[in-house]
Image (cartoon, rainbow, N blue to C red; front, side, top):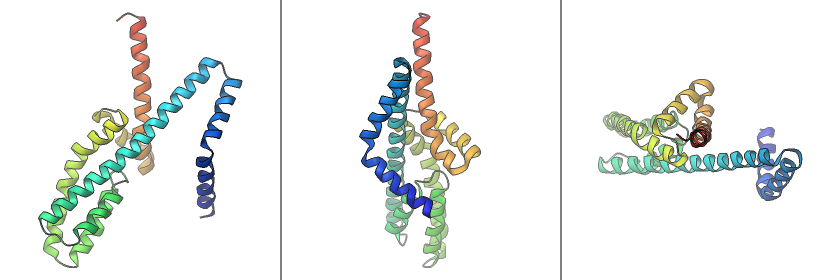
Length: 196
């Protein structure tokens, strides 16, 4: 708890002075590294910053879309607690793969209190919308937000999840996007030099 609090306070101070810290880092890079290397490091850092910010906004967009889908479907089929469960699923969907299932479990429990039959239909609705979200919405929204093709989004989630769990799923998509962009730029540059 103490470490979290200290880290939180430090992050606030860092955000308040990010321009000054950024200038200091640039000065150190140009002072101790060749100009070409410093330019390259700053270019990669800028690309990483943009990619991670786009990924975060893509995750939030995907969560809002999923929450709206649930709200519309639950309202049409007259499920109880439609708004509350939809918001809960949208918030928990920020955690890749497992988050929406946590929301589903809590939603099932809430619906079970009023109607066990509707709870079963809610599970069917959840599995249907989860397939739609997992196979169509997530790769398109998150993949487009980070500039990574859908197939590589699936690969990044699979590899990151198996290697580092939930944290790996969150970090591997923007990390793979940065590597994908750098590799694409490098290969195009090499092809130009070879005149292919």
